[in-house]
Each structure stands twice: as C-alpha cells, then as structure tokens.
Image (cartoon, rainbow, N blue to C red; front, top):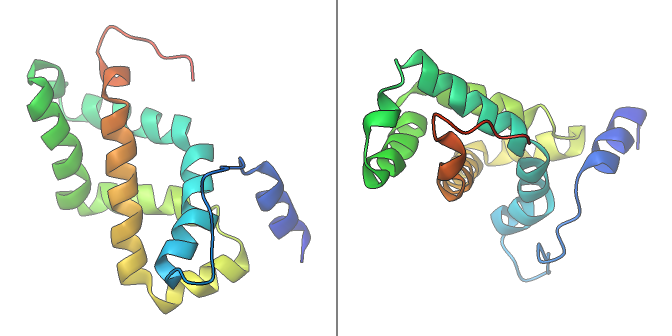
Length: 137
C-alpha cells in the first residue's frame, strides 16, 4: 500500500455491523467495506453541505411539513445534477486507488447505491436541519 491509502484507511471509522462475506455481491461488499465507513466519516460535512443547499434555495425548506422536507431531501439529490455530483465528489475523494478501480467497473450501480445511502442518512438526521438548531457535529 502507499501512504495515501494507509492514511485514508486509518481515519475511517470501524462499523462493526458492516460485515463482508464471500457470498455477497460486489456492490454489497463495496457498500459495507467502503461506502458505509466513508459516509460515517463524512457525515458532518454532508450535513453542512445540505444546510448550505437549503440556504442557497432561499430557506423554503423551513416552511415545509416533515413529509415535504423528506421529499425535498430526496428530490434535491435525485434531480439536481450539480448537487448530486458535488456529493459524489465528497465521497469518491475518500476512495483509495484500489477502491476507485473497483468503483469504475460498476460506477452506475454504485452511484445509485451511494446516493440512496446519502438520502437515507440525511433523512435520518432531518432534525439537524431545523433552522434554529446549530448542530455541533
């Protein structure tokens, strides 16, 4: 391994229930071994980026019901290509060279999996986006 790879792997959190077994698909293995630790590591940044997205969209988010806010999260990531690409960059930038090579072999399916995980993570933390809460992440 090289220095960059060692450093990236060193800073990733360990997720005990992110098990990787031989009978899993490549996508499941990549999700548990790579995506889940990276998403956990990058969580505070992902929250900040989404808060900034809300602000750039005139804070209309705060006038929505909870159900509409959850839809807003999903639609923002699925329909705003620039925003989605920015989120992908935050995650892909944490890949090792070996992980990037695996990613390029099936990037379409892995991008879909990655964005569904980001959507789920942001929805699970929807209360952090209240306009009067200052989260200390």
